[in-house]
Image 1 (spheres, rainbow, N blue to C red):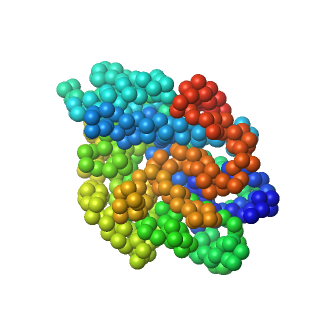
Image 2: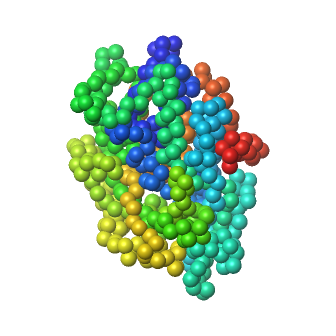
Image 3: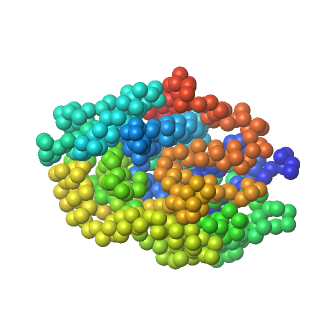
Amino acid sequence: MSNNKPKSVLLIGAGILSTTFASFIKNVEPDWNIKIFERLDQPAIESSNERNNAGTGHAALCELNYTVEQADGSINIDTAKVINEQFEVSKQFWGYLVESGQIQNPDEFIKPLPHLSFVQGEKNVNFLKKRFEAMSAFKMFEGMEYSEDPETIKEWIPLMMEGRDAGDTIAASKMDSGTDVSFGELTRKLAKNISAHKSAEIHFNHEVVSFRRLDNSKWEVEVHNLETGAREFHVTDYIIVGAGGNAIPMLQKTKIPESKNLGGFPITGAFLVCNNPEVVSRHDVKVYGKEPEGTPPMTVPHLDRRYLKGKDSLLFGPFAAIGPKFLKYGSNTDLFKSVNKDNILTLASAGLKNLSLIQYSIQQVMMDKSDRMEELRKFVPDAKDEDWDLELAGKRVQVIKDTEEHGRGFIQFGTEIVHSEDDSVIAMLGESPGASVSVSVALEVLENNFSQYIDKWDDKLKEMIPSYGQSLIHDSELLQEIRESSNQKLNL
């Protein structure tokens, strides 16, 4: 294979993952041809949209599901370290794009906002204290504070302490270095920059419908223009599937062997949203709690301050609902069409192994507003019904697959990359902390699936990601230097 002739890359979906990956290609290979096809009329309408996610810059500062209590009672913070490093990698890339003039006004998509963990009950307080001791001893999480004192906690989260029983056993930890991120606004900025590139195109109202492998190992992709009804055919070297909840059906249509024994379980998110300025003004932080015992990590309750296009609001959730759509603007046939002879046993096995998840989802569906308000009052005791409205958020599709370690029907949490043996088809699947670590996901694809080019790109990658090839986990001096530089570029 010649590495000299410009390659073509066709991306499906104009969300955060596709636009991040396309932004990398634009910088490392300016002559490569980039085409992005999006079925909706603008970027970031589905899960990347700022109203369809909590906007947390996931850095493991407050998310308790990233720090697991072990059988001996110790707290494993390894996952937290990795996620924190990955978010610092994202900040480096965003800072580079700002510094190089490729995107502007970073304060429109990222703002500083303290991250807190809040727990109730003796067992959870003990957990949080041990978590704090393990994390605060590590340089990466220097500056974390912890308190069981109601007065101190009231200073941190006054809204959540008003009306609370003085006898409650509570604790909180706090990191001032957290962020609120509008991934929708960031995606739109990335898409605008890609569109301005001489070798890149973004086509909206275009739906990818089928794939055909050509004799020369390229792919012919059939695309329908939803405005004109025209059928278009595009030939490409690489197919990158970044289509959010629709990634699994797209992958299945390629018919690559790796798409077999793979399925998805769609979950709709919903949040209670407060737009009452008086209430909103009393909570200027993001607060994450502990997931209810016996429920999956996605159930972690959190109360978040949001800054969306000049409008401040609070968001509490997530609440889950089950339904057959893989996309918020998808079809009720999505789930059923994704079931075939290759994955039906995988899906059935997952259902049997995860009856608690199914039961939890059904319970969530049955909740009315009064039930949801009761959940909110565990965080905000004085919450008034009239101040809060229920809003549907985006879809997340939990990846279900067969693995040697976990057997048939394993539900994957986090991000998953599935690719063909020859790396010509690459799908980026998964969920939280996906958007926050999208830069690391893109880098992983570049390193593992474009390995023949990686030496050539090394200098450019180090220009974009100054810590590239080095560990921010083990080199605390480098971490401090990188943080200060990124924060300056991003006005944090």
